[in-house]
Amino acid sequence: MVAGELEPGALYSAPALGERFGVSATPVREAMLELSKDGFIVAERNRGFRVLEVSEHDLDEISEIRLLLEVPSTVKVAGVIESEVLDRVSGVATEITDAAARGDLIQYLDLDRRFHVELISQLGNQRLTELVDRLRRQTRLFGLDQLVESGRLVGSAQEHHDLIDAMRARDETTTERIITSHIKHTRGLWVGRSEA
Image (cartoon, rainbow, N blue to C red; front, side, top):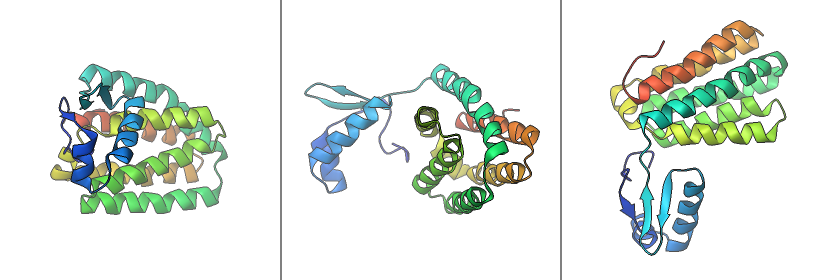
């Protein structure tokens, strides 16, 4: 799905996908049911799984919720995060940049998720962490293959380093500006437009 190999609107069967990936249908079916919980696909009885199309309106709504949750949460984290955690996420940020430079979308997404979940988890609110993680997963799948092809994914990756620098300085104003810009910038990149 991330690489664009499973097309929105298309119907896929677990046995066919299992054969394609060299595994049995059972783990594929379990994975598809997990994806359905996050709204990526819908199960169609006795037919398979259909990859859902996400509208611009859906993406705008999710981005709005992310701005409402992630921005104040990340600013709060900037005031409490310990230097060892910043060192750890700085290493992840470097890996994100490297993955973007290689065009490795799967690793980029995995590392990006780890980075942001690690930051939000510093608040000790498991429900908030899980909600932010789910919202990020729902949106990060869309349009990233075009970002890899255009080379713009590297610029988005660099924003992680900028965020760490602001947090290390305990600069909540800059942290707020960067995380807000990062979410808006990413939303704009999904559709090939520039977001201020």
